[in-house]
Image (cartoon, rainbow, N blue to C red):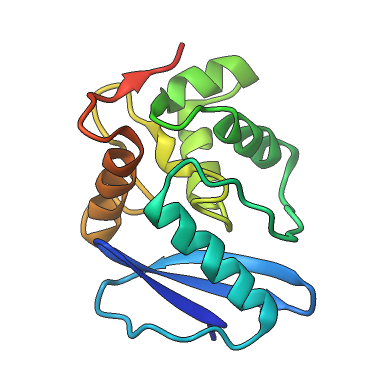
Length: 160
């Protein structure tokens, strides 16, 4: 099912490819076995994901087709505009786009390229919110780790 599975603290990261495109990145339970890359593109994607694990300032250069509704694409663009080490709320993005915070949350959860499109940088007004359509379990631990990884010991700062 996955062309590579990379180990991270609190999770594994599965990578799928088809032909010359990365077709998905997914957070998997920490107990999921690692898998060596099965194709040259999976190898390239795995190395870039590993580089992010070591340095959150890494630049991704992966061939992907981002498909979704106009709202999803707008939310995903907004997520990509959030600088590393910063967060925005679902409500902030909703107000910017003229939508509803719950719809923004759904778009975040529907993101097929997490880490590359940093949905973990979107939080609730009063806490972490959800992650990948989950509100508990390893997904929330993964979100906490990703935010801490990008901020170091600094407190999370909301971007206006």
